[in-house]
Image (cartoon, rainbow, N blue to C red; front, side, top):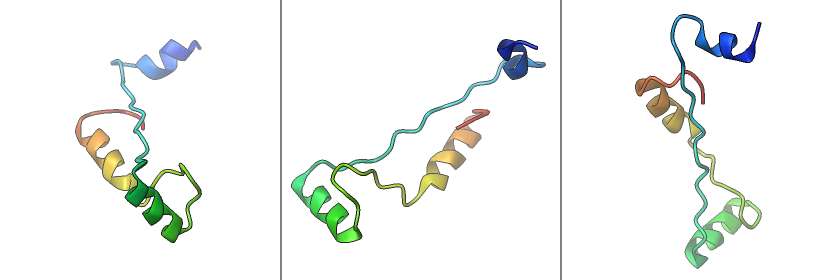
Length: 62
C-alpha cells in the first residue's frame, strides 16, 4: 500500500504543524530563564490548545 493510500482512504486528510512559541524579547528570555528553560527553548506549557483548535478546524493530524 502506498503512502498516499494510507492518508487518502475515502477522503483526503490534512495535518498541521503547530509553531512553538518563542518570545525572543529580553523580558521573554528573562521569563524563560526563571522557568528554567534554556536560551531559545520554546514555551510548550499548553500544547493542547493548539491541538484542539486544529481538531475543530478539521485537521486529521497535528
